[in-house]
Picture 1 (cartoon, helix red, strand yellow):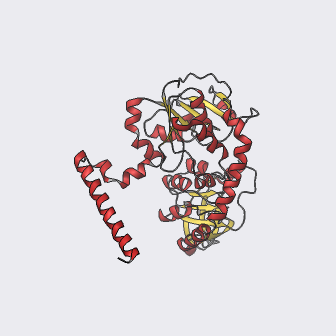
Picture 2 (cartoon, one colour):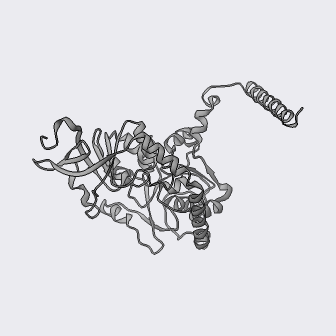
Picture 3 (cartoon, one colour):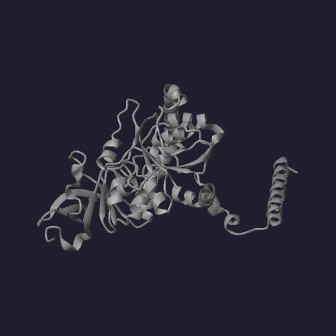
Length: 383
């Protein structure tokens, strides 16, 4: 500690280290320092780190690259998490070996990170503190680039939509499932913004209708935490816990079109049976297409990614397959994303209101709006 200068030690804790933020947040314990390698940290990743109660996040990449106004860094700072970017790379070793310092003691002293894998403290990397003002300026600058980014995103989307059109319109390869979806409602849950709140909002519908529940990857853990057992889990199986994999749900590993399925190795290592499904697009697309192919009567999506910002946060430059998937499902698909935000904004949802009183209130609002519009028209015409 003398080498660091005890007066300059800002934080001393244990390390959790992983290139993938979702893996780091899964393993993190309260108070630890998380080291990640994540450009443009999104809000969902930030929330996972906040829920893990880490004290600081050190990023080997830029919290904001300027491509778009990613909100993760802002959310972390608002939650009181210390943020730093590294000067020297911390992930020089091959993937998987970065856990060398996992759980080892670390300290942030001045503008340098120190680690103590044994008895001695080792200087590791220079750090650049990330401030509220810095993030605010970077977000404003990124917002000015939105038109050019949207143009590029749309070009990419339409280009891949043309290439993937035949793949999306064709039926999926036949798979044998024990989960029956024909003529039933199916709820597909993904780890998107507000997905936990949205699931809670439609909880009454789930309890009453008993639909088939499909979890896309890590959404399975959230559903289990909410006391909802998924019938089927689909994805590349890299962002959910072993406990979720072993919960008894039917497992469908999303594979490449050539049949390769890296996620199958993890499932096989646990000795669990699974079905391999080669399908185009994202795992969310595969889940929706599977429900459609299995003759579901209605498909409700929760937390799915459907906007430019959603896909940029996932590191994707277009959404061709998702656009085609939604076009194919048509009116069979109901998107419940963000419903909880509408409910929070409307006191009528949480406060019982007599129907006549509600109509009276709406009528009054319309009358006031018409009066204001007429006044504005008179003013504009010089009357």
